[in-house]
Image (cartoon, rainbow over all chains, first blue to last red; front, side):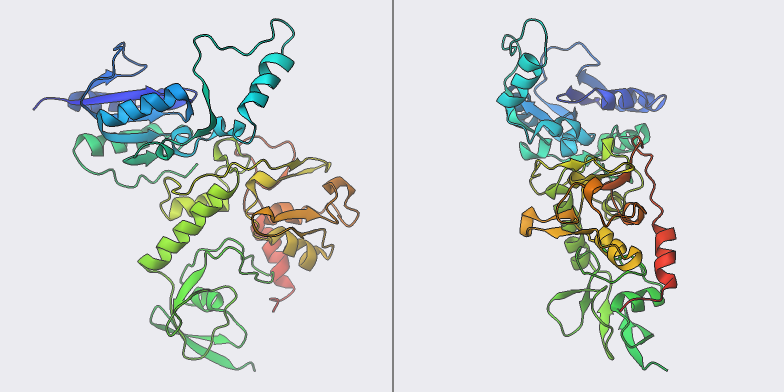
Length: 175
Length: 236
C-alpha cells in the first residue's frame, strides 16, 4: 500500500503547534510508517502538491495571502484539520480584531517608532480586516483545539485519520 | 412540616419539599445538570439557560434552577435535544465576547471552558463578534475584564445577598448589557465596595480576577463562598 500524503501549513500563529507536532517523540515513527510529509515548514517542498490526503493548518487567516493559500489548500486536500486555537478560534491574532487595520498599522509603525516611520508595503501581504478562524473561509473536517494541542491529542487525531477513520472527539480542553 | 412534592426525574420518583426546584430534585436523585449562573446559597436568576430540561406536558424547555418542582411532573434531564441546545448556548457565549483561553489567568479553572469541554465543543459554529470591551483595572487588588464576562450575575447576587453591599448591577440591554459598579463608576470609586472579593471568587470565568496572577494561575474559591452562603439557609 502506498503511503498517504500529509501536509502542514503555518498561517497566523506562533509555530507552537508545529513544535507540539515535533514533540510527538517516538510517536512520529508510527506516523512516518503510514504517511509522507509532503509539504510544510518542516520540509523544503516549495509547491503544495495536488492530491494531499491530510493537511494540518496552524494559525488564523489574517491576510489576503493566507486566504488565497487556504482556498488553494482546501481544493487540494481530502481531510483538512484546524490545528490549535488560532486556527479554531483565531485566539491571540484576534486581539487586533476590534481595531481598524489602518489605525493599528499607524499606531505600530508610525506613532510607535523613533526612526524610519512608515507602514511596510513591499513584500508583505495585505491584512484582512480581521483575523478569523479557518472555518470562516473553508470547510474544515476536524478541529483540534489547544494552545498548543498536546502531542498526545495530535497523535490520536493523526492515527485515526491515517487509519482512514473519522477522528474521535479528542478529550482535550477547549481553548 | 413542609408539604412534600413528588416528581419523576428521568423516571425515578423523587420527593422534594415545597418550593424546591427541579434542579434541587435532580440533585437529590443524583443527576448532574450542567449549570453556570446557579450558585449554591444564592437566589437563582435563570440567566444562562444551560440547565434547561424537558418537562412532560410542556412544549418549551424549562430552566431547572428557576422552575419549582410540582407534583406529578416528569422531567428529562438529558437527551440529544437538550445536549444540542446546551451546546449551542455555550457556543453563543464563546462567540459573544473575547474569551481568549490561552492568555487567560483562569485557563484550566474556568467553568465556561470546562462546560465546553464536557459537552464536546471543539469549535464554534457562530461568527465571533470580537467586540471592543474595556478592562477596569482601577481597583487596588482586583480586575474586571468585560471581555470574559458571561453576564451570569453571580457577582451581582453574591455582593447584594451575601456581602449586602450591592456594588454590582447591570446596565443597558441586549447585546449592550454589561456589569457596572455602583452608578457606572470605575470600581475603585465605588463607595459601596468593601473589597471583600466575594465577587471575584464567585465569578465562573476570568472576568473578575485577582491582580498579579499570570496565565492559568487564577483558581477561584467558589466552594468556600458557597458554603458561607448556604449557612444562611437556602434563599427563596
